Image (spheres, rainbow, N blue to C red):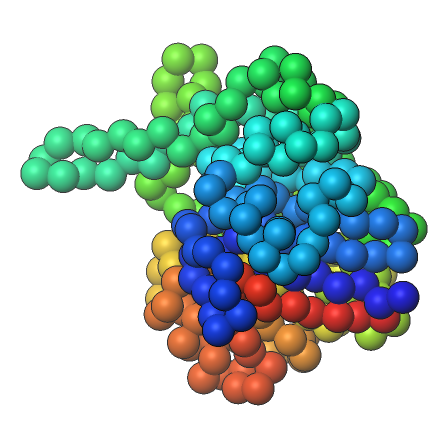
Length: 280
Ligand SMILES: [Fe+2]
Ligand SMILES: [Fe+2]
């Protein structure tokens, strides 16, 4: 059987229908069962699973890319349906985090972390399996764990902060991780927001898998919040890897998505709600 990835939560929808919300989630159908990667912001996960005929009760494990609320907001609603289920994440997924901006000379803080307490999610049945390092999920599927920051041009988003010892510090996003699938066609990389930097993530999965090319990339790249230099350096690096399908969206933003579309032409598609990728 093929592995099929369907985007369930995303900021926008296509003619396939479903609901949009600022967030991300994907449903994976594999020969070893079905998995949920992220849960969106909270309002569209269950309606969209049902809209696309995906049985929420078939989900074997939930995987979280990081603790932002636009990726974890649907966790309670899916746990209410599933009851006891493993949730794979990094220990920092529960960090208290904020988006901080300036308006009229004043600081504006918006809470951006997970909106549920761990104990509440556990009372619903969530069994958190928290790890920092690269790990196997199934025979073909891996979670990156912490990604080393190697490139000089991937700077992170200067408006994102985390609480540490009562102070706000630039969010280190140690919990930011991505899912890797080893398919007969090549590696498939499923991103949450890629806060670690898309090229850092790619270099790390090449190191871990021993491969040097990636067949497909799906998910959020956070390039909407990157400098023009970072966008161009990212495109230059991607060209070296000869990616066949680039289905990014969410925090990629329209400007960076249009640059990627121009550069990668038919390899590029905008990964909206309902878009699918099949491998195997
Ligand atoms: Fe996001
Ligand atoms: Fe994020």
